[in-house]
Image (cartoon, rainbow, N blue to C red):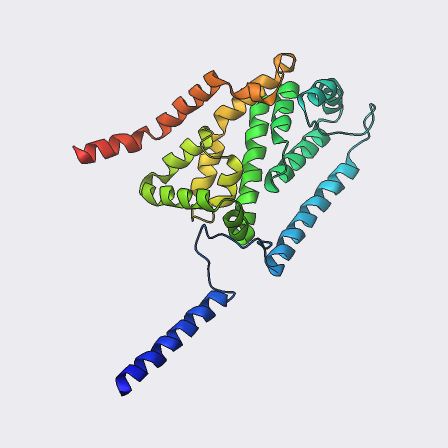
Length: 277
């Protein structure tokens, strides 16, 4: 009778160890696990996020205080197409008088919005086209890449619970797709950046969670956002013809983006074909 008793005792001990491991703060929850409605961040993670936000906001506020006053009134961010049309001439005059200050304020605001996932960067990109023409693409690509990189590192510290809470199924899908790619990960990331297959916000947050190396993330971002940035900047040159942001990505534009994106994954497709042959 000793053997069955030992089995029962051992089973009870293992079950207790599993419960302890699940409750341990150092134990990792599986990617894509759903939360029970509670706030996804722990107290420490929330403190880190709030501290980073305050540092960024303080720096942005200090830059704003050093900027010369505008003759037309307070500096204002465009939040719609109509705002862009009204502010274009005033901001253009301000940028021509204080070019360095304007560029510093523009870049800081864009990166801040991109880092903390604040909607409205599309209007900042349109503004770059309206004020600087096609050359504004360099400004947009720089700021979008810098903001996405900041978001990547922020998510590396506190992003896992947030992404698992907001997009559990999408995160599982993303992780499975990344696991298939192997040495062709850069091609796949380029495809995602060029095409609207997955939202850029999700890519920025989820990439460090599924262990995409930063150099792959950076290269895919800086190259992959060029086509969409060019479309947006060109649209900024003709604000009068633009009725809505939705007009930026009509069927023709989406077709072109997917065509360019398909070229980025062509080497992977050809390699698989040779292997099967």
